[in-house]
Each structure stands twice: as C-alpha cells, then as structure tokens.
Length: 269
Ligand SMILES: [Fe+2]
Image (cartoon, rainbow, N blue to C red; front, side, top):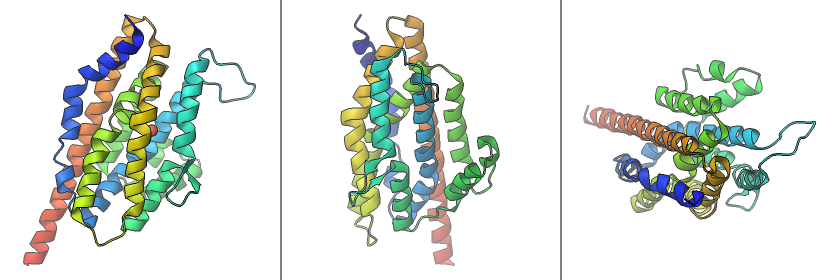
C-alpha cells in the first residue's frame, strides 16, 4: 500500500473525533469580546506549547547542535524547517516579521485580554525555571495545565508519534476549530477592533490547511514507511492529541458559561 494513502486513511479514521471539534458548543458561546478574552487566556497556552511541540519535533528530525551531523531524513528536515520558518517568523498584519505566538499575544492585548499568566510563564522560563516549576503558577488555568501536560508527554515518544500529534492534533484541526470561531467573531459585530486576532485566525487557516498539514502527511510517510506498528502508533497519538483538545475546549466552554452566569446574576442584583 502507498504510505501517503495510509496517512490520509488515518486522517479519515479520525473524522468522528474531529467532528466533535467542528461542532463543539464552545464557538456559539463566544458572543462578546469578554468571552473571546476568556477563550484566549486559556488558548494562548496551546499556542505556546504548539511551538514547544514543533521544536521538539525539529530536534528529533534534524541536528540542532554543533558539531553538526547530517540528518538521516533530509526530506523531513526540509518539511519541518519550512514549517518552522512560518510559525516562528511570519509576516504580521503590518508586514513585520513575527512569530505566530507573538502575534497571538498582541491580539490578546488588542482585545483587552489578560496576558499576565502567559507572560509570567515566559519570565519564569527565561529565569531558568524548569517547565514543571513554571507550570505550577496559580495564574495558569488548570485546564491549560492539563492540556500542556498531555503535549509534553509526547516528548518521551518517538519522532513519528510527535509528528502525528503535531499533524493530527494541530495542523489538521486548525481550520476545523478556527473557521467557526472566525465566523462567530464576524457575526458578533464587535465594537472593539479585533483585526489582529482575525488576521491570526485567517493566516492560520490558510497556512495550515493548504501547506503545513499536507507537508506533515508527507513527513509521516517518511517517518513510518511500511512499518505497520509505527502507523498504529501514529493513529494512537492522533487520537490522544485530538481527545486532549476536545477536553480542553469542554473546560474553556464551562468557564465561559460560568462567567456569563455570574455576570447576569450581578446585573440582576
Ligand atoms: Fe501551522
């Protein structure tokens, strides 16, 4: 069997799980800029740990230290390097080079979201705290901690499993998640300027669905070849990654609903 067909077949097998993401009730509850801010204050940790997952995969596929040793898989090296360029140094809404993470942070600032927790995490890591220590911060929502723990658990696995988590848990689901959010934001007609988050979402939908996800499917072909066990592990990693996302969205949705309820109680009082 052609391995490229096999990667696509796994994606098809993941359709019922992906369907739960496309139809998640969370999107319909993002009605105000305050709802969007709560979403972003959680989701920003997935934007950050996405970069960690990408760097881990990069490290597993290429040589990142000196003395340099040639990679055994130059095709995958090229694929992952091109994705890294986009994610770490893309053009922002004003045409300046910026990482997608920084664009997200700036979009949070534009919408008035609280960036204290994510900034503290970065400061702690810059001051040489371990990831485990830095993630103990009480400012980080427990659901975000759980999601990130799931991501970091992949680091103990092999390159093809990390690639599967990246392909099926990230690049392959971006359009499914971001398109309904984008439509929701546009239909809300917000008073506030949300140009930065809209640019971020649109840019991701374009890059991930048209370029990054197909590249990741090619990479899975390179990494698994005809090894049936590896393909099964790829499927398992995909299931684990998408399930973690669904759980994360369930929790964010609950938080947004709780906030709406307490706001309406306050208004009634
Ligand atoms: Fe991407």
